[in-house]
Image (cartoon, rainbow, N blue to C red):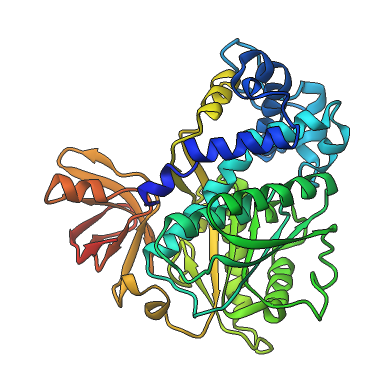
Length: 444
């Protein structure tokens, strides 16, 4: 995904300074030296980072051997990361996200600190990248006096802060710097710190966004919001839907039911999920059910899948049981996070994720994403690598997913072709196994 340079550096020095001041103010760390101290991080943060790294990847292990994890990554010390083998089954099968571990951890304060330092900024950067992609393609909300957003499973408000970062560092998409966020979270202590962090971060970048926290467990058997609740311009969930146990057809119905009443016309629903195979394919399958739900006769609203697919075509990744689809961004990590990654044996110079953006709108794609015009589009869904003088990559478009080669006319053109790039009016010759891009109308 192509993001502005200012956004790729938005989580470095100034962000780190704001975060450090917040942690000191909230007495989450004893002093400013602890922020980058090997001794403090190794004792108080890294064990939880390792545990969470395994927790977030738990569904990737062999479902037929629930008590035997795949070989765990090792820290530089050679010590395996993550939970002991005896703990694995509980971690793998838990469906309440981090909630049991918030409660069961021997030191919940340090667990929260580890999540806040090591994972919250990453999730904010992912959401910010989606906002930047919308801006890059020309999306703009109709004029509004005051913005209203809602984040489900908000945790420490990483998604809401990611939207703020995206708006601040991308071209204007019509979200004003005044507005309100509703944060929905089932863990009270996490919600409280998320409310305070969002307030601090919003102020640090000059946004006058107020926050209304709601401590509640989401009950999918009932409407998610009361009938008197307002409509929102942006409906956001980040690393939330992958924990929902509803069958996907029912989940799609429930989501659209709520969007009918609580998403503004011309509003957006943004769903960001893990890049892992199972969760990514689940999001793609949810997309297919949503598209079917959009055409139900009882629906009053009009809905369109905008990103990453740029339309309602059948998903090319779902054509093969072994395939999935995800995006990736490059960013400048805060210095303290480089230290955490080094101690934990992680490498997060790039951030992968899966995502879906739905517009509640009767406008055409050309009107919603004017940078694409009326061009036929094919999006790169893999990196491009050299094969002699050619570049080889996978593209996905109206005819599904296919392997393709293209010979760029210059080094500058070659640099434009990367994961997430959109080929405009590509003349493709061949079949899904091997296609040739004979000509291009442009690259976006």
